[in-house]
Image (cartoon, rainbow, N blue to C red; front, side, top):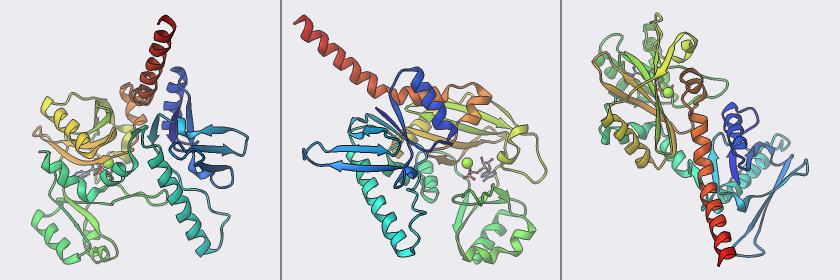
Length: 332
Ligand SMILES: Nc1ncnc2c1ncn2[C@@H]1O[C@H](COP(=O)(O)OP(=O)(O)O)[C@@H](O)[C@H]1O
Ligand SMILES: [Mg+2]
């Protein structure tokens, strides 16, 4: 069985589930927010070396998770503990689920993971990504991550006027902030970085933004071109007006990207690069579970299908082994 760890409203999970269904591969959307009210989890050590893992849903559906052969770590949700109102009990319950689920991922350790949660977590740390990219020979923008206003002022001064962008580590549903040029207003409020570190970076001019989606050793590079919008540097708020096309990467860059995936131990990644008017590629970041539908829909690159194929890969190998051995028994 193939496990997709996400939730019902995830269009990417839907897309991959549809491909898996067309391939006639049994797959299950595993939404951790169904715990604890709409599903239960039991790990039964009756046979110590081979624990049985039962996932039972309130609607009567049951699944033996020890059968899982591949997993897509896509959008893991937190168990829905809204019914636990006491703050201490809430914290305790959340920790207990966290422990049990982290143990479950280890128990499924024989499965192939896209991506392994531990590696995914390590690889997604922006503060460390740039060093790894630089070690592998990518050009990276001059960057300062700091909560010290004085250090930031010096950094901005050294780059010169209008040459610094600022970006966040993460976003939530409530707060999403695109990358922006640091303006006069921001300079007046630089002291607020004391509250939490901010990523400051040299502004890199664009011939195009490049999004490379890597799926199990395959690369799907796309270029995103936008007519200049005054004051905007991040393509996302104006994605509708952008031209998105397949892009041909130079061979050494392809190799470098594959080396990056290998170094990070990832099977899936969406890498943001920028191609400058001088023809240089800069590395910005890798999103370990980045979206691909906006690229697939605009370029026709079969990314969802590639994810499904990768997930089905382990199953088809196992199926072949079983078919061969059954034939061998019959004929022998
Ligand atoms: N140093 C930079 N110079 C110019 N534009 C940038 C720079 N960094 C990011 N951008 C623009 O902002 C977008 C988002 O930045 P990115 O580093 O991918 O962070 P995130 O996607 O997490 O916000 C990039 O794809 C690019 O369009
Ligand atoms: Mg990005």
